Length: 502
Image (tube, rainbow, N blue to C red; front, side, top):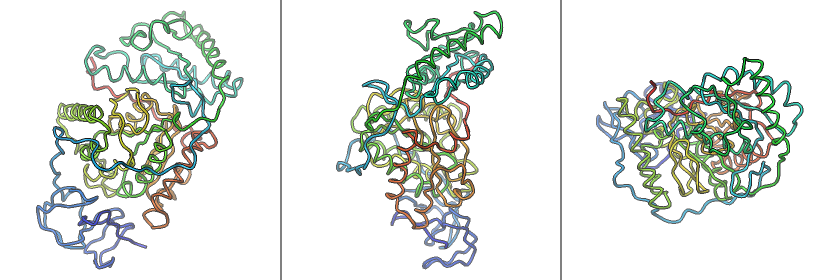
């Protein structure tokens, strides 16, 4: 059945839940055109220059007159001005009361009193430069066939391959971002504190930029140019790997409080349903996690930029607000340097799914953060110092945001999609959440959780969010594998590098 969904009483547009042909009567409205699923229809007559309002905010200004029942799409809107950064308030309003979770523990791999726990027990092999990735890929293959069967408590071996390390301006100011990301990802809680670094020997990204002096030794670091050929280096690498596997194999899952859990929230291939089904259910699950003591990280600068004033109000103190402002201002300048702005973000798929512009996309994106206060703001690849809800200021690109969140310490990611993507991470399980029933039916062996029932009235946001919370704990505890993990659908790690390449 075709339904109209109006999110806020102030909205002068609504979306249709199914493809709706011209002449369809919905409530007191007759459609004047065929309206694709998820697209906006005018609820009243609007003149050129009028504000188009969804989520109770201005999406843009009409470039032409429209009648009630008309289709409003991305070609008909002019973007509003960006919210300014120089007058953002913080910690305003009443104290937020979060829902209480029924479960406050999970089964994870403990990493000590101050550290987040692992949801998986992985051997990670970090490279200093792309030149060695071919050798490391072969190493991973040999470890899987020759060594892993001997160490049943180790879930997998992963290569931290990347395109950085040489041919770059290593001392440029922005080089700090990829360097700290690579340095921090090897400390991800899923890797159990075992360090294994493979370098070449002539690269610009030297080992001392990644490890402290006491960890730079033959137990942790191997440079390929020190060995007389492939067979010799592979023998040495397998010997090093086995030592690490022996240590990791001693680790076992134990019952831990949610305060040991660090979860990432991300969305990709969004559509007009994302902001009313998948992302709100993730936001409710996030609130349950934070209420139970866990840390939840959400990201994607361009997809929160038009709601930055709303996020600032949730910052718990001036420090968090000021860091939010500085990170967003840096990103504004970064985009301007490339002669683009936030309007470059929406993809053809986003628009086909009903998202007209970045404002509409942002309003649907920020709801995945729930309602919890923001305790800290991080730059891309930075490690958190506090627990609770954190904004990590990463690019919105899926394959850049994921590695940045991994570097910041997430051990599981929840990924919302409306258009569909097989995205996955080898370094942490990824739970795929669909925004539409159709998406789940089309990709029933790729989608782990369907929030589409919210749009059809079969389920509330709270009910879906509670189900998603339970699934997160099942996956974190190793009792369930998401499809991307089961099928080993792992994306390349693309570390954010705004520094020059020489």
